[in-house]
Amino acid sequence: MVQGGDFLNGDGTGSFSIYGEKFADENFEVKHTDPGLLSMANSGANTNGCQFFITTVPCDFLDGKHVVFGKIVEGLLTLRKIENVPTGQNNRPKLVVKVTECGEM
Figure 1: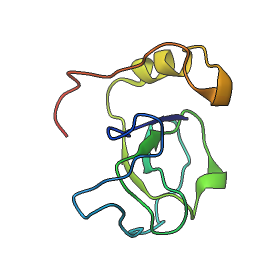
Figure 2: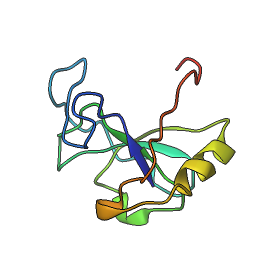
Figure 3: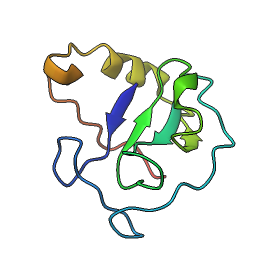
């Protein structure tokens, strides 16, 4: 998976949303069955903030713990390129990966 969205600290510890620091899980109806699914990253139940991840393979171990809220409709090749960036300690990319000018949500 590819994780992002920590625009506060840039290290996976930042949390912020339009609802405050954290907000509740919505539902777990959509399962992590395919590559390209967008899901909320959290540190436990009802701790959603600004961070998210994108699946690169099916991840059934995330079902019931993380809320799927979208799917990539274009750019799966870009996801594959990000996925193949070499990683180091704590599975962090050795190179800066920054997605810009990607359109509107």
